[in-house]
Image 1 (cartoon, helix red, strand yellow):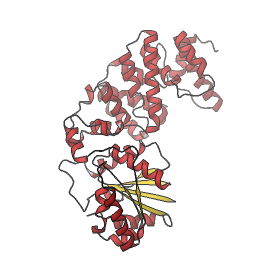
Image 2 (cartoon, rainbow, N blue to C red):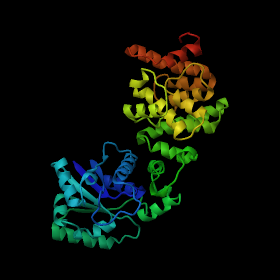
Image 3 (cartoon, rainbow, N blue to C red):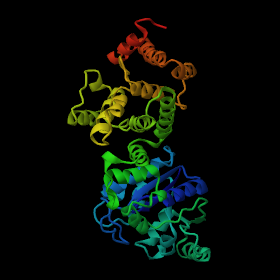
Image 4 (cartoon, rainbow, N blue to C red):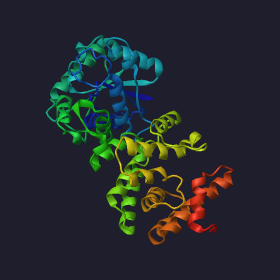
Length: 399
């Protein structure tokens, strides 16, 4: 395999880093690209007020995930776990042990490439990996790149590739940190990374999570889930808004409910139970062991106690998975929006989509019947809320 090692402080990981990663994957035909956030970088001191290494690792993982290349990208904590200064030569040695026999490439930007011969143990670095150098600014001097390439090839027998970045994003991390402290700079970050920064209060941001704008609520929510889930969340939001217009609900309420409905989707069982216990969210016996059901309960708890949402939003999230008897309008709309958003594919989906705009209660009944039928066929227990919803909206008559 060809493996790219992309180190840096990632303070924060911005669109320039992501563009460089995409360019390197394409140019070198990498099978894997590994982001390696620095723990204690030897060449510079981290700026005062920088997040902890662990938070930079989490941020970098969010950025890597948002490249939507899950089989290619990963984040490695080798330099954060290492005690003392982290030298690239040591990281590459560990990479060679982790991926024995694979071809390693070290990804570096302009300033790093032009000074590489002055690094700690450059001969060891260049023996262990090829160098992929990319320009990080439109003003980078191509002639200087060529001179350095020739020097490294001549003096060290290095393998060097110089690549262009088609969607180059010019941004200084120092300036970006300053912008973030003023409530600016979000355009240089993946929305989910910006959401992570707001959620954790990094770089002097002071977001009030209970009073976020709609856009910031999206970003914070997106920072909590896998990037592959975002298409579903966006689809659910737009479908909920459309259903709100059709049935006379508050569109703003439905958008906020949809934005947050899956915010705890990727939590562990322990995290769900801890949040529900902390916020007094009651759970029945089945819910205590079913993560698929728990995310609606823990999500409702966060919507109320962390994000300050009104009861209509909270209740819609609480029952968006199971439904229940005698649902509010908002509960019905989120339940169906989650079910019929454009990315959903199952045999009855077109029928259910049409019914949701014609007969709301009939659509809820059909939505409840489908999982009942599936669970019965699989010999699984159906949550009582779902069976009660079906009975309530059909008066006990099966389709």
